Length: 292
Length: 309
Image 1 (tube, helix red, strand yellow):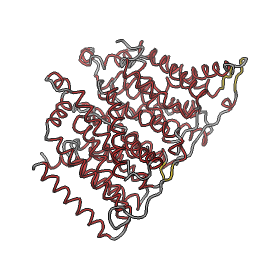
Image 2 (tube, chains in turn orange, blue):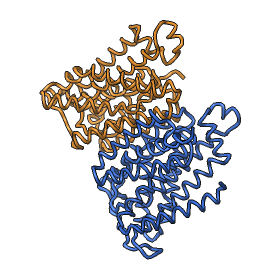
Image 3 (cartoon, rainbow over the protein chains, first blue to last red):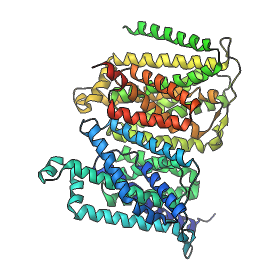
Image 4 (cartoon, rainbow over the protein chains, first blue to last red):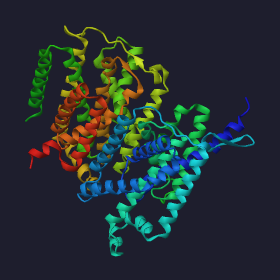
């Protein structure tokens, strides 16, 4: 049997595109877990919430899912600020963030999921837009727009956030807050307030991530769970809190998953992320791209 | 109270529970009671790791379902094996998986362990879904015998009795741990792991013991499940509701002693059984989620915290 080169190249390309999308899904956790040290395991549930909002806007108002997600961005930002406020008052100030904080986010994850089930049922939902059915062809390489659009949107969001973090005062303050809150206070910035802004931003990314998710695949309330393993695997592997490292890890995972699913069948791909996560935790917990 | 007198009291309570349930005269009482008892075992098992050492396990469903699927495998290969032995095997399998996960992740910060358990549940489900011998995604049928093998009664009464025995064992073990060297070691890890390590507490070994015990009991709680439901598929065996219930029950009851998880499991389990019958099962799960969030914010010490000021 010859080696199916075209299959391999196509798997590589779609893995690369998938990786860009994974970066969009992970960036919120990269901010909350990587920079603020808040283990927001409910993040994928908020992404699914974003998907459903894009779905409603698309099926009822006929809006493009990406446009819809940008319109509701402020709502997600406020939701994030509110959640951080409760978290801050109830857990961080009591010095009891680890166990009860985790249980808190687990409860939020569950409430979001069950509420979506109660409202929409467990059917798969999907969005429609004119560009989604088309595929670009370059020789034997296929570029489905269904993957290209999410990839481009993700990269724009990633670059925007990277610039924000590196160039603005608030961005630098966010990077500083996990390292040294006292020094930040001396710079006349309130750590609680900075964290509230940062957490609001991390939840806001879930709106866009949700829209690109429902473009890539049909969504039902519980698929968020498949993303928990992926998201944290990418975040840890990329070295907590570094966006370029996170992107590299996301692309790596995307490519490996895509090759696994091409050659062994798609039902195996969730196991890949877990393998990655365990391997990273066991061998190099600071991440492949992290500072040792 | 000494351990042995505590165990005799437990056994007395168990017998009272069994005959009390029999007095109802309706086999539904056994079906509902079985679920409540199953949660007593799960919540107590979770608390051995979560409450005593402070490491949060989100993968209850994985350990539980592994126990259930080990019974499915035994049912297909050695159908003559008595159920108590199958329960023991389920416990060993889940305990070993707990040990392995713990060995890989427990040397790191606690949150990594929690995330790993969450991801592990997804992967175990993937493995079972792809394993056609145990039914794969289609699920598997297990025929429940009609009669109890050891006394005159329905098979569900036998299952109920087994789960009752497991509850007694789990609670007795949890209480014995609290007042032993092991328990003091666990508490030291929970309060300040670095200080414990520095004072010569073998933290990794203790954490591994806790993970294996906790996972083992979860597996044992799941082992009789195929005979209870008679049809088992991966999405019901690995249902997230097991994980959320098992975390909510100790946190609502109180994590500091064996009584908390039992209290939480009996209250929340009964409430859910009632709500599932009268309203709907999705809504009853929503109630659990909301209660969990409200309790961790408002009552961090749980129900037993109200009585110990």
